[in-house]
Length: 205
Ligand SMILES: [Zn+2]
Image (cartoon, rainbow, N blue to C red; front, side, top):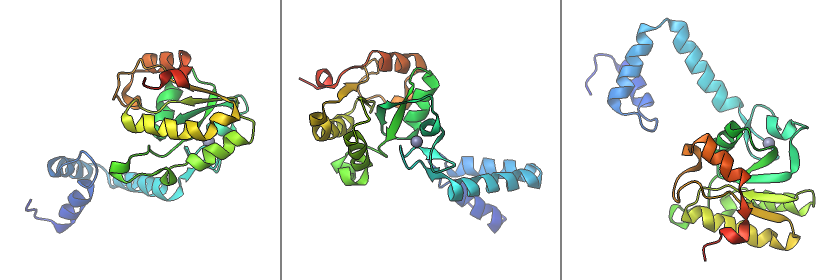
């Protein structure tokens, strides 16, 4: 795309690096910013920069946070004996939106996927297993998306903690197989947590 300004060209090139944003959309966004007061762009740039530099990950559950402990883990009203295991931060947001879960979370940071080169060591599985072995956990709810990788990950964790005797459950599959958790509507997702099933029953026969 030939542009009369190298500065504009550079901005468009940066914006179009974002997922789902093509060159055309990037140009539209850049031109939009040019029409706004300068402060608008400064605020946007500053917000992005501080998010990138200052955001932390909760040392307990690996959720995103502004402090070392996220708001959920820091909340004394949350039940620490029930841990919901999720793939990523978006799943925490989706489940929180249902307002039906009062336990805490453990964010794995992905799922085991040999094809994508993701092994158990790249996920936060070890710290989850350690947490379970402290003896304070009564139930682990697997809430990964019902895909093959999700199932593999669940089973990998299950094998390591099954001898501890804690309750393991999986969210009910109101969500169609292969669907991503974050796209499930709140009612379906909320219901699938309430109607969770013993983990053994969720395994494919
Ligand atoms: Zn936390």
